[in-house]
Amino acid sequence: MNSRHTGKIWDIFCTVIDNHGDLGVCWRLACQLAQLGQSVRLWVDDASALAWMAADHGQASFSPVAVLPWDKASDQALLESLPYADVWVEAFGCTLPEAFVAHAAATRQQQPAWINLEYLSAEEWVPRMHRLPSPVMSGPAKGWTKTFFYPGFTPDTGGLLREADLLTRQQGFDRVAWRQQHAPNLAPGGLLISLFCYEPAALPQLLAQMVGTPHHLLVTPGRPMAAVQQALKEMAVHPNWSALPYTDQNGFDEMLWSCDLNFVRGEDSLVRALWAGQAFIWHIYPQDDKAHHAKLGALLDWLQAPECLRRAHRVWNGSESKNRMTIDQTDLAEWQRCVKDAQQRLSHQTDLASQLALHVGEKT
Image 1 (cartoon, rainbow, N blue to C red):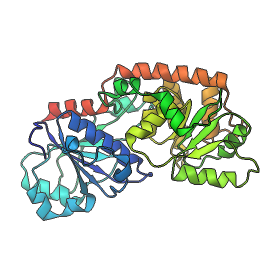
Image 2 (tube, one colour):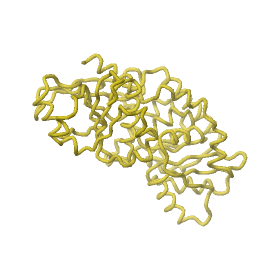
Image 3 (cartoon, helix red, strand yellow):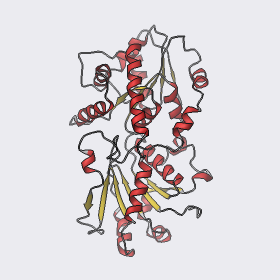
Image 4 (spheres, rainbow, N blue to C red):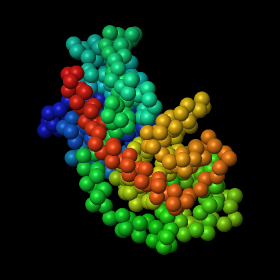
């Protein structure tokens, strides 16, 4: 750890579930806390994606972020060699290794600020649950207390991740140059569209609609690429499209800034699409009990989305089959105005990392 930083020591725990989305959020949080003068240890069960996701990983400016293997959190010798953390963060409902908790409970006099960092939602119950205490009723830390911390879209929640220089960096970005580099054959009047999704049933409709148009589709690697390749097998004529390589988080932001429409998925890319200020359609992570439909509806309500944008989301997320996936440029202008208004509202709120640091300062 870098002795220049006099802030708290944080242990953030992350398990990789959804194609590194959870790791993406945790890495952003760790780096933003480091920029606030905190020292962070990120414990993760699969850090391999940081090789391409984290442009700053390993650079001296981010030395306060130490990435440690999850299983080492049960290594007694290592735990004894590390200074106690002031803060524990359980990201997205993960459970801390029992040996890690037992070591702390047996050797330290005061519990750390223990935070259960929850998933992002715009549902109305989130402000009521934010910052509620949760007593630990069993195990080696019995008698200690956790705190629920909910990211959110309103001032009575924990806010969203946002780097201090994000909007300045965005304003100085050369959008024209990026588009010329990544879609040099984009025809006049054509839309540049990015695709980051799971396997939406409406994907073939989107691809078919683009055939014969000047629009160009940029497909991200992994599941989106596999889904597109599968859909193209059934098409005699293909739309204009090209494949993107894996990119770091800054590069992903630049893609969102450059495109006229962004298809995004999960939590991290949803937040980045909001900050990008461009029209977007969100592919929410599907749940077997269909609870994701209510969560999607809550976001669209907060967004004050027009009916055409709500309909596009319902079709893309499989909750409406009577309509088809269509991209209308008149609708697109309305979608962008909606996102710009939301971005403006969010810009006046305190970011998640700062709120966490303030909360911990009150508790320790």
